[in-house]
Length: 328
Image (tube, rainbow, N blue to C red; front, side, top):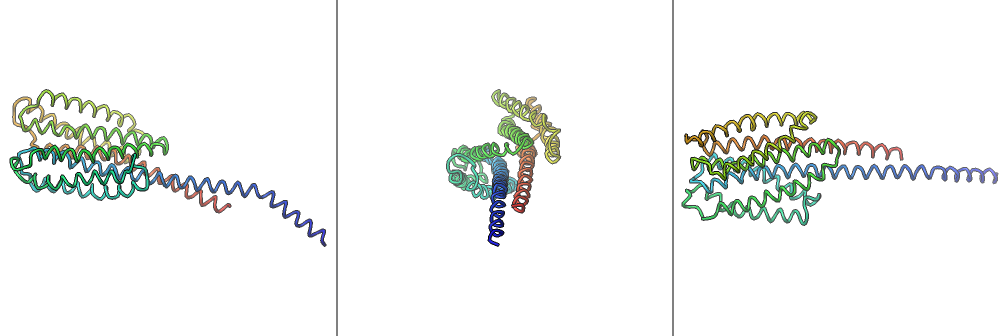
């Protein structure tokens, strides 16, 4: 009897020894799956923060140019103009709040990103309290230099958000090859939008003065060349993109390249010929805002596609972890 017990014990010990590597191996696989899930969740957070940053950036730029020109113009501005600015802020504000929280969880930029964002926003908020009532007054009644001070504060926020966007986009490029291509589309579409928006001041000046200076004509030519080069990078990969991105690209072609570019050409021809301009300042603002919004939509749709790929990777990681844990 003692001998049989001894054999049973020995057999149990042998089974334990044989199973130990299997258990250790299974534990390692589970740990690896858990690590992949954590990485996937972080990637989703970065992708979502990238898109939030971009929304805040777009709407801050929608405000910056028109208010800068309004502060330099004869004025006063109308209720429709004020309502447009309010709409942009109603989108930018919540996005900036969400971004401030997100930057405590992911790396948005070097240094204390939330503190830098709060400081830059505070400077813009302070100058808005001067600029908002000033655009409702004639030019002669506005504080001297207010347009430049407002522009400096707004540009400070724009540049910080561009820094965030660049840093975050670099992090989502590594998800996979298609995500890297989508990140290229986002960057190129934003570069096109950037050049398109920067023409605003020159076109407005041409309307106000009845002519374009040589510097303005050269500046517009350079911006259009930049836009053309950037957009060619989008066109080069359009065929292989997800359907939502391709649809956004086609919409941008209609709204900006076929729509506003034609209006812009007619305006330039009229000014150069000494005829009355075919667009007023409000018309230029509407055209540029619609065009840049369509270009922004290309970039935003690319970011949305990156986010969906990140979420799909996270779902796969969750499934794998559940499977490995069940086998352990």
